[in-house]
Image 1 (tube, one colour):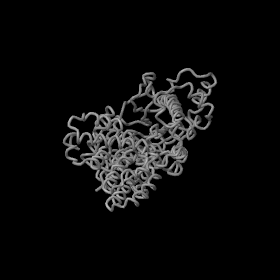
Image 2 (cartoon, rainbow, N blue to C red; image 1 turned 90 degrees about the vertical axis):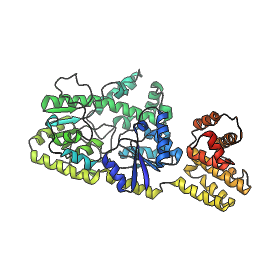
Image 3 (cartoon, rainbow, N blue to C red; image 1 turned 45 degrees about the vertical axis):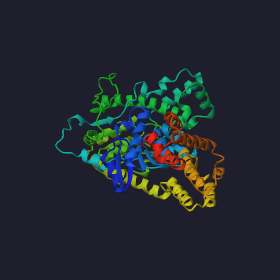
Image 4 (cartoon, rainbow, N blue to C red; image 1 turned 135 degrees about the vertical axis):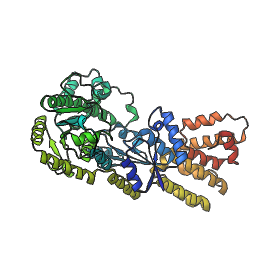
Length: 520
């Protein structure tokens, strides 16, 4: 049975969805998702050694997990449910063992245009079965959630949520432009004004005046994504505060958030709710649930909408481009394009309970049809079957067959073709292949000739030769400092898989090496 690691604490429905596709789910640990990177990496390798999983899945793309999976030749699948998501614009996102999905079709188009070939579009997903079961629970108190209108979400107050406020002085004309974007973007949904109106000249001025220490680790286009995000968070702050003030002044309104609302005593701030235990009761109990989408989500159904519908709650949401593809508007879900329209529809549906209940039920049926984890995971698995989930393993099998037959001529031909395969540029792949090749060269008496095929991979060849030399010194020299090899392995990010293969290819007696170095 295939094993898949899910690092975060996932819902029962997500585990069930993978199990339905024939996978054994391996649960992550707190150390894998929190703490320093060294601890996370160590935990990952310990889990890999113990469980021998060949796949990893996460909601939202994790750069570090991507790096570790690609080092070990493990297929990493992620479904990103936030937009824009900076990590998708990292160099790591394009690595060959990643299978990435985003719920926003505009972001998908943008990433494909940048050359990210392993990104796909996938509709948002949630745990419809378990959320609905919790939502209709009997014999539970619903008093906390009972109200005419509810909103659950961040108000994006405070420095951590407002990178825009940290932007320093800018040329007068540029600051005026950004202020105009902030003013005009409010209550215009389905259109990202900054994204549509920015010019290369504007981007250059902003880059010259706004210094971001970490941006060099990402694609050049990541700066524009940062600005889009910063503006989006600031617009959301202004917009959500305005909306909450309006709703508190006119309706029996409850806000569920951890954000500070002391600026307006009229707002009934009920605090956080637990995602699986409390949120379903809230959405199912409140007469009308408001969703106010971030403007940087321009062509995707947000997770909050799917969650409300899964709980059989009535959803009144700001309009998002393409919603008609999924919903029968005013039958499955209700939309607004301004706060005036929002209030008019609240007034109408508060006085039309039967229509409201019917729409909430239709929305639940649509969520069950479209958004359950089981639907998405089945799609992910179909994609994996289509594109071959383990290209490197197939390459290794082919190499092993050439090695076994001692057919160096055919191996040379295969490796020449392999230079055109993305996986051959992965350092782990190169080290693994070279160690196997070295074994075949030694047995066939064709020393170093096969390396001629890798003249464009001089760094990997150099790393391989140095690692092979260190491994041999550990085996044969009594006083050789083991720490020199450990440091080299850490510095060059050599995987256990590659080290095992090189020891096998280079040592006269593997046991002598492992007794000195420490057992694998």
